[in-house]
Image (cartoon, rainbow, N blue to C red; front, side):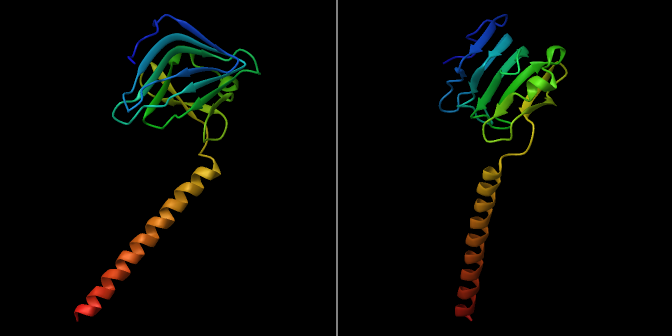
Length: 161
């Protein structure tokens, strides 16, 4: 799949569970620029396939979630590997941002500085508790392995004396 398959002036409307998917399998990383992204009811953007070296980028002039029933779900988004950009001139308001949900994070989104012409739309809050649990579990295993290695070195040093 190649980048820039959609016209920069296009309005893309996602409706009733529609999915806008990056198909950059294998860490290809794709970039799409569109004028307007409009969500009606529930829709999904799937950022699968980006990496730190080759990010997936969705750049829009504006993001519209016209009613309180409209929700945009972001899947497979990885911070600093995927970018959801919106023009500073047409940034969504806080009500619309509250209806953008990143999978694995608390509901809601916020705007973060990206450059002089764009904001980046990112998760509003910290990862969900399950994410913290996974991180702490990994840290705990690392400490146990490190401790066993240190203990093994002490044992071999004692045997050498």
